[in-house]
Length: 240
Image (cartoon, rainbow, N blue to C red; front, side, top):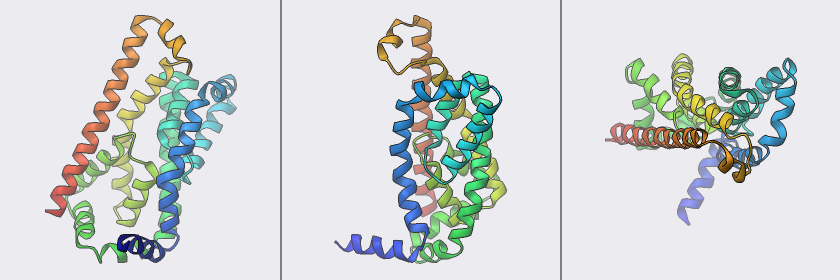
């Protein structure tokens, strides 16, 4: 039970960052599942309003991903479902960019030096943090890109880590955009191909569509696996 007491003690010392971290690690995943099951219901409104739709979509992306309430992969899938590959990619990337700016701004305001004080008391955590910010700039950007690459790594949690570690914002922004572009392409393409959540409908589609969807899924799994493996390797190198 010592680890439980230690956990609660750490959360208390983190101040508002503690509850935000817990919410960031749990709530978006739950609400993301809800959104994915309602894509067929929600997307027609965005598609049927060519002017208000994209603006509201970007605004929802910024607020819901930036706070955080929804995972970026779910909102990106909505973009692909509603606007297809090209439109979905443009609006999803736009929303992601501004969501990152919004999240970085308010997280920077609440974190201050609380998290760094806790990190400095744990040698392994400090080694990872120093490895992230003390290396050459291109390596920092690459690390951030790898953190953003897997769809399974929560956007909000990574934001907290990067802001708390005081990674330079220009490196966060550049690395994030580099990392998110490949997965966004795959997600909007996949969502644009799967036009209904009814699997019977999917089976009735052409063989080409089924193969395209399957290939995209395999590519997403490969991206996730490679990204997670690279992150683990970086962690081992930093703490060595």
